[in-house]
Image (tube, rainbow, N blue to C red):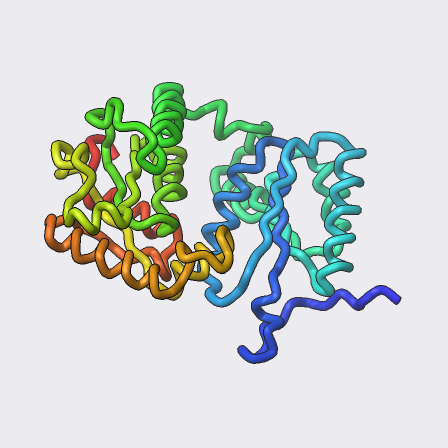
Length: 289
């Protein structure tokens, strides 16, 4: 017998069901990036809930709409409660089909565009991908360039052209440097490099030598040892790298080094990528932001 699909209700902390995971679909007849960005920003307001994120882009035919409904319904049966759907579907026919799914449906167009049509007294274009078509091409190119820069300068793999960096993030491995660098690039066109602080640096009691000439551009990230051990354990279970003893040592030494070198830093433990990036932006204050 198939399980009954019920609205999700958080349980008491020891029941575990509130943390068992909720599936979130981002459905669009374009790339789905707008729906995903908006949806994830909203979901960060709900602490203690775990989410599985699934982006379904280019749902631009009735066949794809039917397949989307089938996939969402199957996930609902598997989870035992309704998935969430953040939608930026423009085509009304496709939109009606996808709305049949067993899900909580959050339509960004009906929520925001239709009230604005009433307010302005005109109809919107209802054009797929309009946001990306009207974006300033120079800003778009700057973001692409920033993304390439972040990828080339991830995890200290290259010191070439560090003089072009708007910010260089430093911190222990797995404290959030890479996702923050990419977010700054994708959302703000910021050229962000990142360098790991490793045991060799702690033994020398010095930053990597190449960073001293760029010291004003450094910004530090840290994390609690307990959380760091959890994150590292997912990557290298039962390793010294992931052990709590080692994580405590690395975090302690990294924070001591950042204080000694006068580097501004923050803890990423309880902060979303958006919050971390905003703090970094406030610190570096790029021109024209």
